[in-house]
Amino acid sequence: MNMLHKAMTIAGSDASGGAGMEADLKTFQELDVYGMTALTVIVAQNPHKDWDHEIFPIGLDVVEKQIETIVAGIGIDAMKTGMLGSSELVELVARTIDRFKLCNVVIDPVMVCKGVDVIMVPEAAAAIKTVLMQRADVVTPNTIEAAYLADMEKVETLDEIKEAAGRIKELGAGYVVIKSGSRNDSREAVDVLYDGREFTIASAPKIEPCYNHGAGCTYSAAITAGLANGLSVREAVELAKKFVAAALRGSFKLNEYSGATNHYAYRLENNKYFQDMLKFLDKTKNFSIFFLKKLRFGQRFCRNTVYMKKEGRIFIIFA
Image (cartoon, rainbow, N blue to C red; front, side, top):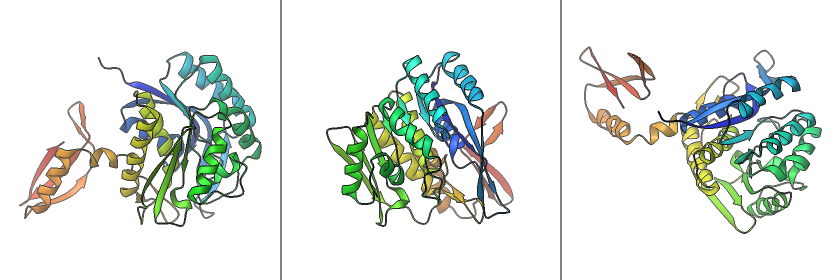
C-alpha cells in the first residue's frame, strides 16, 4: 500500500471556500499530499452587507488540541500557517515547531484580507515578525505584508521587492518568496525568491480577466505540498507558480462580490490524454460536450470525465 506524504495547515476557514484551509486542503489533494487542518478562526462573508467579513476565533486550547492530534498523533512531512489571529496563537505555533523539531515550515504571514490593504491584527503581525520569521524555512508574504515585515513604507517595484526580501531574510527566514500578484501596476506578475545569496525572478504575463480569491493561500499550500513530497525549495516554488497560474486561468465567478481560483485546473491542463481527447472532440462534428465533473463509477471515482452526446446517445470517456 502506498503511503501519501502528509502536511498540516494551521489556518482559518473561509466559508466561501476560496481561501484559507479550504484552499490549502484542495491544493494538497491535487498535489498528492494528505492534508490535515488545525483550525484557528472561521471567516464568514455577509451577503446582506456587501460581503463584509465577519471573524469568529477558535479558542487557543482547541487549536492546541488539534495540533496535538496531527503532529503527535500522526506526524507530518511539511506544514504551513495561514491566519493567526493573536500573539498567543503565534507563540503556540513557535512552541510546536520547536517541540517537535518540525522541518519544511512554510509561513504565509496572513495579515490582510482580499481588497483590504490594512494590517488586521497588529499584535499578531508583530509576533509573526519577531517569533516566526526565524523558524520559517520559507516565508511567502505579498507586497503589503512584505512592507510590514521589512519596515518599508511600500513595496511595489522590483528593486523594492528585492530590498524587502533582503531585510526579511535578515530576520532569520530560510527562503523568502515575495508575491506581487495583482498588487502591481505592470502587466507582469512578478515573484521573487531569495535565499540570501541570489535572487530568482519568476515573471509571467498577468492572467486577465481572472478571479484571484485564494491565490495567495494556494501558492503557499502548493509550496508546502512540494516540500512534503521531497522537492527542493526552488522546485517547490516553481511547481507552485505553475499550479497557481493554472488555477487562475480556470478561475470562476462565485457571486457579484467574489470569484475563486480553480484548484483542479492544473490536473486537467497536465493530463495529456484528456487534453488530446478534448481537442479531438472539438474537431468532430455532431458531438457536444455538455458537462465535465467527477463521476461515481462502481466503487471508484473517475476524476476526469467527459460526457458526450451524439444523435441522442450518450458517450462517456474516462481519463
